[in-house]
Amino acid sequence: MEKLKPGGRAENPHRDAGTCPFQKHEFSVDMSCEGCAEAVSRVLNKLGGVQFNIDLPNKKVCIESEHNPDTLLATLNKTGKTVSYLGPK
Image (tube, one colour):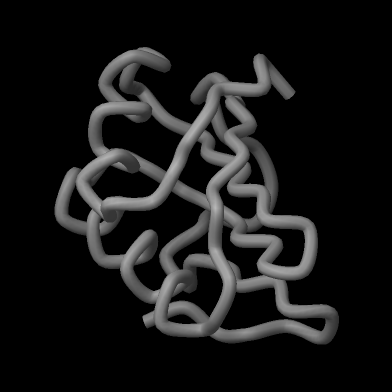
């Protein structure tokens, strides 16, 4: 499970510290509480092939992934939250 960092940032513990060959994408997700952030973590972990940071105060999720943005957007939409793609990071 992700560890909450100061400032409400969660980081995937399976993240390889250092280099990652995946593309980075940033999404805006209408998260209002820790439960919302946990829902985001759940759907992304279920998808697999992702490394991500959740910035709850700013309602943003940065994802490094082998998946395309459309797949990531569809996955995040499974939370029932309003989601928009902000672009590559």
